[in-house]
Every structure is written in structure tokens, then in C-alpha cells.
Length: 343
Ligand SMILES: *Cc1c(COP(=O)(O)O)cnc(C)c1O
Image 1 (tube, rainbow, N blue to C red):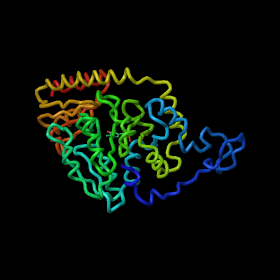
Image 2 (image 1 turned 90 degrees about the vertical axis):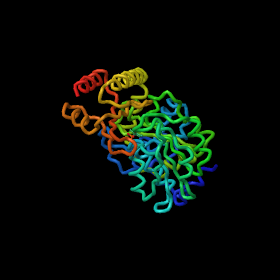
Image 3 (image 1 turned 120 degrees about the vertical axis):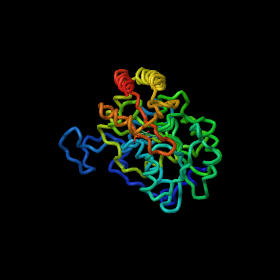
């Protein structure tokens, strides 16, 4: 399967914008008069590296994948999601397929790009409806969004099921792994080498604790990763962000925090499940819990009145009377439990 066959023709023939420093091929330059920048140092007066070479090297080591497999979004993975539509879907013609319930940005971004999004409900137990997903496809289906672990249900899908989709779907399968650091399941990053129509997305917003920086990634075979580089805004990741993330990667081992969050998640799941007004806590492989209660709106209001905000998913199809609780610090989680014991 040649993934380039799914790309919009105008993107395939796109000449990327050539930045001031792209044409420069090394040498010992100490006077920079090529980009109409201010010569006066402000700490920010020079354009950043549009290709984020140093950062890609660091991410390559961190993730065990070559630098030319990596795209970095400076507006988080939300940027990668939007670019994916722009690279593969002809507006008003092509369509995409997504599971429901899942992350809301796939639908918003589809709408903005004038791409029809076909929603396929998860099975009752939130497992992947493989046959129904394949049945939803027609000759204009270009993308299939699989979020694993899935937001808001919290479960991971089986790697075998996702690879079966990649084998059978005549388009790109995008696996959104925003919560993979919390998961007991392996990432599908290594499967890109054998399944060329796979795109894997990850982010620094969750386990890495860098939501404010807005750094997301898409991983794909080099010829697809290169297309993201062509379509993105030339300087989509600003200088302080590149430097900040390099520092974070060099200085931080996130595993103790990830371990604590997983333990807290399991403690919270057990404790919430024992409360009288809780009907069900769904199994989670992420840093949040989907919880079915007697009256989600009432519990939500009660919590907000006591200074705690959770996500009310009551109106989401398949999530009636469900609240989504992000796992906080041990103190924050204890506070929520204490509040709910009195509810
Ligand atoms: C939080 C989240 C993201 C992260 O988005 P960023 O733009 O990188 O912050 C991506 N996908 C899902 C499913 C999420 O829940």
C-alpha cells in the first residue's frame, strides 16, 4: 500500500515555502543579514529553526524512531490533526471515519476542512467495532481516527485489531496515543515500519506535564512526515518552546509521576466504585476515569459548588450520566473522595 496514493494532488505537487536559512548550506557565518530580523539582541530577535533539528534529534532518541519519521506541531497534536485533514482530504469530496465516543477535535477539524466525518459507535463494552468501521468506508474514505487509550472511555484497543484495520482500510489509519505513557499496552510506533498507512500521534501535554507549551507530534513513514513539514506554517514551533522542551527532555524522568498517577487512578477507581451513587467505573488505561453515576448533572453541580471541576460527559452518545475525572495529586483525589462521600 503506497500511502502517497491517499494524498491530495495539490499537496503532492506543493513547492514548500523556502525560509531565509533553507538555502544556506553551512560555512562560518557571523553576520546574519538575510532575514530582515532586528540586529539588536532581545533574546528573541532571530527566527527559530523551522525544521526543529535539535528537538527532533532529542525526540528521536526518546522515542526510538528516526528523526525523518517525526513531525512536531507547535499548537499541540491539535495542529497535527488539522494538517492531517489538509494533507489527505479534498474538501467537499473525501470523508473520514471515527469511533464514537472519542476526542472532539476530529469532528471540529473535519467540519472546518469541509470533510464529512462518519461516526461509528464503539461496541457496548467500548471495544473496537472493526467490521463496522470497515463497512463505513467508501472509495472517498481517506482517514480513520483511532484514539487509544480512548478519550473519554479510557480503554486501550488491541494492537491486533488496529493492525487489522490498517491492513484492510484503503486509506490512512491515525492512532492518537495522547495517553500512551499511562497505558499498559505497547505503542504502535514500531508498526509504522511495516504498516505504511499508519500515522501515530503523541503529545507532551499529558504525562510530560507540558500542556502550556503546546507540543504535539505525528509519526509516519518519511515521505508522509515530510508532507506535514511542507504544509505546516514555516515557523510553527517558536524558539522558547523548542528550547523549553529540549531542557525538559534532558532534565526529566517522568516515570515516578506516571507511576504515582497510575496508582492513584487505581485507588480512585476502587474508592469511587464503592460509593452508593456511583453505578460503574470503567476500566482505564489513561490518567482519567469515566464514571457512570445516578445523576451526572447533580453530581457535577455539587462538585463545582465545592470548588472541584470534572468533565460532564452526560450529553455524549454512549456516555449518559457519565463524568470524567482526571487523576490529580493524592491530596486532590482524597478531597474529591471526601466530598463525594457526603454527596
Ligand atoms: C489531550 C488530548 C490530545 C492532546 O492535544 P494537544 O493539542 O497536544 O494538547 C490529543 N488527543 C487526545 C485524544 C487528547 O485527549
